[in-house]
Each structure stands twice: as structure tokens, then as C-alpha cells.
Amino acid sequence: MRRVLLVATTTGYQIRSFGEAAEKLGVRLVFASDRCGRLEDPWWDGAIPVRFHEEARSVDAVVSACGGAPPDGIVAVGDRPAVLAARLARAFGLPGHPPEATATSRNKLATRRALQAAGLPTPWFVSRPIEGEVDDLAVRVEYPAVIKPLALSGSRGVVRVDNATELVSAFDRLRRLLRRRDVRLERDEAHEQALVEGFVSGTEYAVEGLLNHGTLQLLAILDKPDPLNGPFFEETIYRTPSVAPLELQQHIAAATTAAAAAIGLHHGPVHAECRISGEAVYVLEVAARPIGGLCSRALRFRSGGLQIRSENPEASEGAGAVVSLEEVLLRHALGEDVSLYMREQAASGVMMIPIPKRGVYRRVDGVDEAKHVAGIEDVRITAKPDTMLVPLPEGKSYLGFIFARAAKPCGVDRALRDAHARLRFVIDREVAVAPV
Ligand code: ADP
Ligand code: CA
Image 1: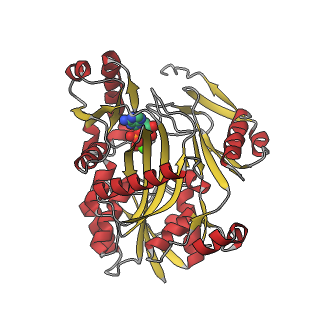
Image 2 (image 1 turned 45 degrees about the horizontal axis):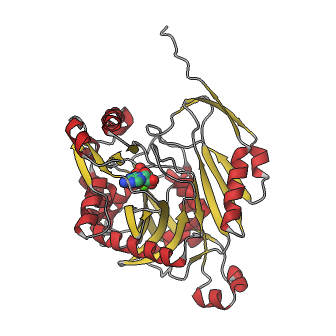
């Protein structure tokens, strides 16, 4: 039986989806995770314990656990696992992203340097130790600017600042965030610095792709129809296919390819974000991993093939069974040619339900109503009752996700917004508990 190593920190939807794909393909998944022992999930039986901040030791642990027989492929879920997965691919002699490139892609300062060195559109940027000062910088730089951590995700800690006073206070706020326990536990040197860079105005797109020995297979361009102008950058709707003009879509694909090459990424999944400013496509980052968590459910594929599709679009919908993004990735990791997998024809989208305010989440009303909105496929509330909700820039979660499919992209938008409008979240004010 073929074995695929799955490197992950999370345990959610994407893991189960890989598990289902593996079952279907008759492949055994072997997990490597820092969460072993803390989970009852049956998927994790026999998982190999690793620590993402001890890469060399973790590589040794996995190699020896595999008992001299390299796996047939490696997949990773999450940013830190992607770095370890790349090292493991090299250790096992499997194709993958070079470890140096995954380390660059995970670090926003290193990414800026790589893109700039390659002559690609890049905002001005400067880094500062988080324990230092920015007062001198604040009076020198051009505004608007953006301040951000080097290695967090989900827009956590990313703030637009319009003047010196805002930069100084955002820097203090970022310092407090980077000193929080959950961040310090990552033991990542990158969390000792902040990046300040020029604000790139314009519309934003996400690109989901697969690099095949350096060649990009575009899986989807996702529009972000809600403007992201700050001061915080909460993602809401991702929608595909893109309604951008075809020529712009080609620019976006070309810019993603160029940025991935500049970073050194070579073989495996990539997820990029681009901003279009005037004629230029600014690639903000290219992650060496697929789109995260539940969002991947918005993407479904068929192995119809190009010819069938262009001759008869109706027939192409029936040409192959619908498969998940995870199945496509698993097949790719096993060395299969997946170039004929294309996203289904329907428009599809997901809304990451924003946290409207800080407080204690109690419940949500209207979920059934929202599920009955035409075009809505599912409403998943992921927030746990009676837990604290923390909005951006400190927060790192959403209230949940809404999924929609429609004939046209505008129908997806409408469905998502309509469903969201029917949800009524009950969030109580945080009450200080007196010490006993
Ligand atoms: P993360 O890894 O947390 O997603 P990003 O650097 O991608 O961090 O920033 C998150 C979001 O903040 C981006 O998707 C974008 O909307 C906004 N953003 C970040 N940097 C800039 C910038 N220089 N100009 C304009 N918007 C930006
Ligand atoms: Ca990002």
C-alpha cells in the first residue's frame, strides 16, 4: 500500500478531506504533527510527534519512524508544516519545494527582499526589532503605510497607518501581540521584528495553484469583492471564477509564476495574494501550501480535460466525478499528472464570517433561514458558545463560514450576503470576574 506523509498542526476539515481522498485512492496517510497525544481523533492513530521549531530533530524523528522506507509522497497543511514538509521531501529525495524557499515564503521580510531582488513590483519596506522604537522611522516614511508581523497569518497584526502617530501606536500594539503566549510558544525568531511597508491601493485577488517542476497550473483565481482598505484587513468573501478581464487574469497568473520563481518555490501547492495597482500586479505573498481549512471546500474539480471542455461545455460537467482540492493535491504528491483537473464550471464562493465585536459568544440565530437561501450549500458556525471572540488585529479566528454555488459569480455574492444578513449573533459584553 502506498503511503503519504501528512504534516499538520490542525485537525479540522482539511485533514478529514485528505483522509477521505486517501481512502478513495487506497493510500495510507501517515501523520506527522505537534498535536499527537492531545487528540482522540482516530485519524491520528500512530502519528509521528514533531516540533516545528526543532526542524532538524523533527526530520530525524520522521525519517527513523519511517524505518528506512521513504513515503510515496508528502503533503502539508499550514504554514509551519509546509517548511518541515519541504525538509522532509529533501531528506527522502522526493520532489517538493526547496526548504530555503518555503522558509522565504513564510517570512514577509525575506519575501519582500526576494521579490525586490528579482525586480518585481514591491512596495518600499523596512524592518524594525519589535523591542526597539519607530519614532525616527515614523517621521520619515511615506503614508499610507502598513505595519505587520513577519510570520503570522490571517491578517493577524496587519494594520494600515496614515500618519506618524498611528504608526507609533500600531507598533506598540503589534509588540503586545507578539509578546502574547500563543505567539511566543511558536519560538520563531521572525516574531522579534516588525515590517513597515508602503500601502498598495487597489483590488485584491487570491491565486490557488500547483507548481509542477516550476510550471504553474492555475487551479483558481479568487476575487475578493469586498474592498480591503484597512485599518484592519478582515477577509470576508472569496469567489471564483474571477470576473476580472481575461488579460488581467493572465497578468495575475504571470505575476504569481514570477513571484514563486523569485522565492524559489518549485513543486507543490501555492497560494498567492495579489493587489492590482494601476498597471502593476503586486504579489503580496506566495505561501507554499494550499488555501486554508474550510475554505478549500469552495473549490471542486473534475478531470474532464481541456478538449472536451472547449467542444462542449455541457458534456465537460459530466466528464469526470467531482473531486476535492485535497484529492487533486494528494494525487499530485503521489507523482500523478493532474494537469487535466479543472475547477467545475459553476461559480462558487465562501464567506469567512467576520467577528463584529469583542465579547463572549453566546449563540447564533437564523442559521436554518440562512441555509435555505437559494445558492447556499452550507453554513458552518465554528465559534464555540461561551468563549471570547477577539476581532482583528489580535484575533485569529472567524465566527464561521458560509458556502455558496451559483451559475454566475454575482449569484454567489448575493447568496452569501443574503445568508449572512439572516444570521443574528448574540455576543455579550466581556465581564470582569472578581478574584475569589
Ligand atoms: P497575512 O499573512 O496575515 O495574510 P498579509 O501580508 O498577506 O498577511 O496581509 C493581509 C492583508 O492585508 C492582505 O491580504 C491585504 O489585504 C492587506 N495588506 C497587507 N500588506 C499590504 C500592503 N502593503 N498594501 C495594501 N494592503 C496590504
Ligand atoms: Ca496573506
